[in-house]
Length: 331
Image (cartoon, rainbow, N blue to C red; front, side):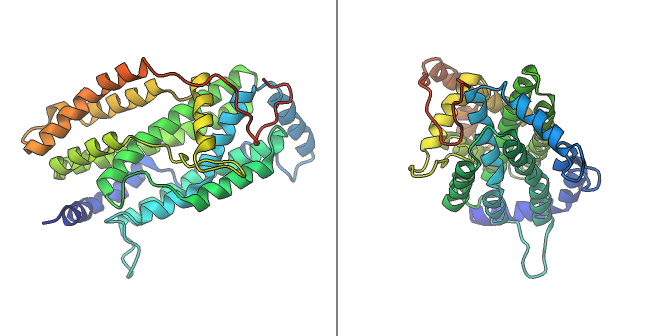
């Protein structure tokens, strides 16, 4: 039987559990927060005074901070790309009246994620600190350019990627929120913190998907995990670019900003890998094939190898001038 058929059989075998995952890791729509819970009410007489407060508090945040917040926002706004990608994964089926559990998960996950870009985009607009047209051009480019995260239609690889990436975004949003709060911006701090909470729930869900698959097909899952780590987990916005630029230029410069701020670092990448190794108990799996054993050895040794590489890495200190953010004394 081909790898594709095995994966499809496993996805179909565990599909009855998906509703339980949704009940455990997603929040009913009527109960979850919405962007309007945080932003000034445009129907209220206090709208302009509350907006002015946002603009005043925004002046305390530095240039690298705004670059990072803008890039995080654009990453969240590229949601159509992520949904269409996941809807094409083997085992996710919304055709021929099937509408299976996996397609329901993808849509429900997308609906929760959609609120993140919505609230951050509106905050950026009200803050008066960024060039919204340039932000919008970059967002359109990112969606139009698509992405290639190295997973193809393989559900195993896609769930490894989302397990990793959801924790990475949790870390980034949480740290941005702490920085905002430290500068006295409680509203933005609270927004970023609650987004981080959503990302953690999603991480826990995808992490559980992988654990469940390990119980059905440990050899295939371990090999898929190792293959993803060999390719490296690229960020979903790795094609990020500003107007008039080539694909990926803005992402490289944004990564330098995030590294300088300590929002998301090479060390975080290593620690996420180690956490996944530990949770999935990679070192304790028994009865693996020879190929899977080699993959397991690679995964167990990889954190140490990356630690040595990280110690030699250097990041640019020169401040790149983004079109999204005017300096205006924020250096």
